[in-house]
Amino acid sequence: MLFKILSFIYGVVIFTAMSYSIYLWLKKGYTHKQRFMYIYLIAVFFVDVLGIYIRQAFQIDQFYLFMPFNVLSIVYFSYFFLVDYQNSINKYFLYGISFLTMLVITYIQLETPIIKIDTRIFVALVLFFLLISLQWLLYIINHIDEENITQKQAFWVSVALIIWSVFALFRLFLNQWLYDYDRDIFSIIAYLFNIANITMYLFFIQGLRVINKKKIA
Image 1 (cartoon, helix red, strand yellow):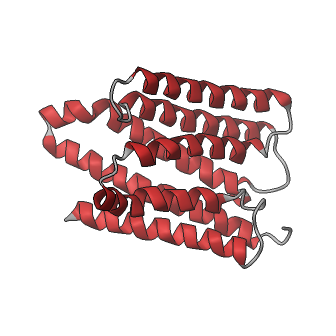
Image 2: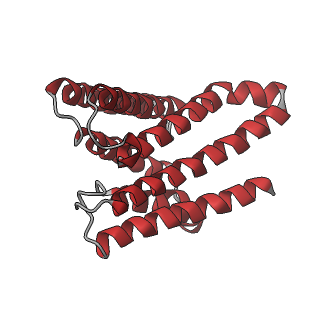
């Protein structure tokens, strides 16, 4: 029951984030200003919410939805953080992380004999999110400007990705062990990961609210 409630809340939060981002795009003309967040959120809604019904209706394996989404996520968040960097070192470091992640998931997928998303691909993606988020935070700390860090959209997105990544790594590495030895803790971790998912997109919404309050487009 709790899992269904959390899943419903997750869907509502994603729909809210997507709708708000589209509103900022269509009503206020915020495209670059919100870093095209609506593109990513539409993809999330399509894969995570509608994807459940699409897979059931058309008997489509989740690979055909999640693999393109994984690639989109790498490309999108590389762009998202890149726009803040004013020096070549951080730009090239981000390029390197992005290219290496794409290379790793491509190699893993080609090595996998059947059509499925290998767990190692998720590990690579989680590490990618964690590294680029920490890189941005370190960059901002070393390049302080007049704007409060909490007034930056990228702050909320980076913190959201870090929180989600920590829970995701914990679940990925302990999932099977907890399932075998302690089902109660396994269930608790599953619930906490769902809460982390919800929290991530609530932070995304806050990031959108921050840019909506700014006077300069």
